Length: 193
Image (tube, rainbow, N blue to C red; front, side, top):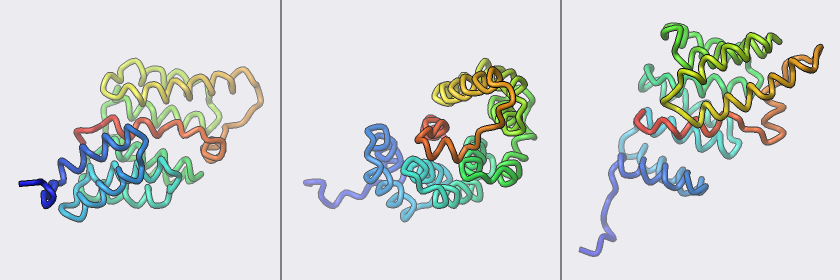
């Protein structure tokens, strides 16, 4: 057998997509993910497809795909957190709050709950409290190190806002326009979802 008629299953396509993504080949990753979805749609395939589209700036498509992931598996907290971040990126603070409201059911010490709380505090202008809460999340988050890196970057920015008394909250869309996609590395770390 020469392998030319070999059909890959969705799990193989998922891992090939992760590998392509890690190498920066978004086109190949998106192709693998769409092929996997065509065979058997799953929350994790839609979740990573949304991450890929977010990575190339197609935020509305990414929102749709993250929403589909949550429709398939409403317990996918990482997708819920990332969907809220996407909405923040699009300056839809109310949409982010609604999306994140289900994270309120998590234990108080859960990193995703702490991170979303910190972000909302920062958006309201309470940078000192945002820094404290985000740091608590970083301290307990052992499962997603790239997310810790991103949150530490936010903490550093918020510290700058604390020192610049009178400065208002920066919008997430300003970050996007400036190329600061602070949340995107967090998408792909949760491979088992």
